[in-house]
Image (cartoon, rainbow, N blue to C red; front, side, top):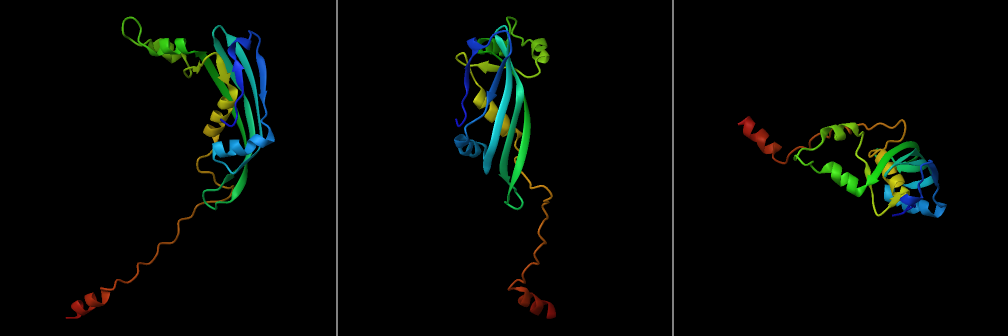
Length: 175
């Protein structure tokens, strides 16, 4: 992974912890390759990580300056993104318990409806905020980027070439 910033869960207290991720300029080429863009010029992620029992809440913003290739002209053009991040994390055991049926073999619909999105698992007591950053960036990129002001116009239809058998057809019609 071109950007890894592991955080131990036990280091997060009840008070929110501010975390800032700014990769080294030497990492930008690997990040650009991972994201499938031409280049990354700047990247900064600012997060607030807070605890609520065994669960963690991550909120913040990712700011990135990069270049993408236009799907129409194939020219590289600059893109500025501000990506909001909001995620909940829970221990793997809690997530497994939420997904499995209860004692009466029914899934607790009320629990599922109260969740905006199901929480992400906390794996081995570690959160990789670098991975979270890359995932949110990848999901926020336009899969078919177009340079501003460029529109796709369909090429004019080609006139069909005359068939070599057209002369024979003319002879047959004249008979």
